[in-house]
Length: 345
Ligand code: PHE
View 1 (cartoon, rainbow, N blue to C red):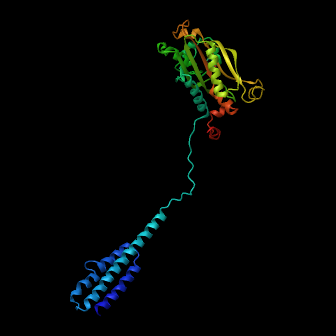
View 2: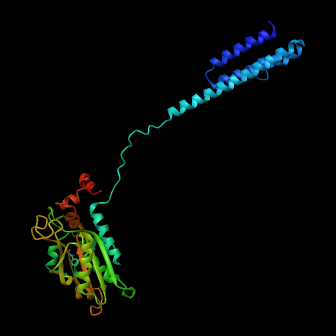
View 3: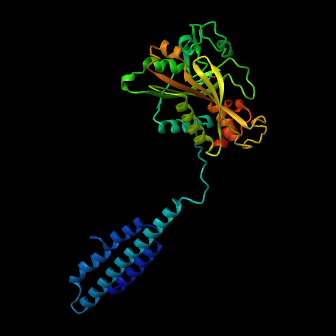
């Protein structure tokens, strides 16, 4: 067979092999087999020197043609395979963005905490410090220093949980009044503090009573503090919480550690004073107890009541939450039913 025939046969053979090749590796093998240093086409090109002079250009140019063609076919097919491999891979790795996500459960603040935060915000704006007290207190701070000596009937009203070591679970955040009075350095300025927290009383739990609830205590002591400062402060706060269009009413009351003492009512937000079930047909809702700090309380904490006067108030965020959201049973605030709590997200 002459060399030209041989080349044509080889050309067909290589084309067939390229067509049948399935992957890049096989195409590389074909390249090496035919175009490599020891490849068949290379071999033919090298053998041209033995071909007669008339035949040489014809065969030479044909062999070059075949080499170029084969080389092109291999690189074209390599590209096609690489492209389709990539497409397959991309197809396999696609993320189906239309799949619905898994629900992510975000926590949120308890409704009582929200009310406390709201009230703290108002008092921070009035220049008060927010301070923490102790939930486990001694009798001295919870009662005695608040002008409630051992035999005082006011102790009965706050019958509470006593611990074996003589301490007790505080019955009122007022316990922190005496601590702050003891600790405050009046050379640094007036005492203005707000202290929120849990309190405990041995109550029988019902829709409006819980053995554990919250209070927020406020205390201001400085020179020349009068009842009008107290009234002004409480008016600002109730308006900020319940709205400017509601009226505030002050009633005389009694607490052992304030003199005079008052209770503060606000127009019922539900019936606007007409009378409804929420305000028990009075048109008013009781919101807090307050008064001018009793001179005995100041003196017992070592403060001269001729020089300093003050006011104190105590409000119940549980009560506020119930009023604000129409919650009719205080126990629901503490039983942690997620269906109830999620309403306040
Ligand atoms: N501590 C009182 C109570 O629990 C409320 C109160 C606080 C009254 C401060 C006057 C001043 O009933």
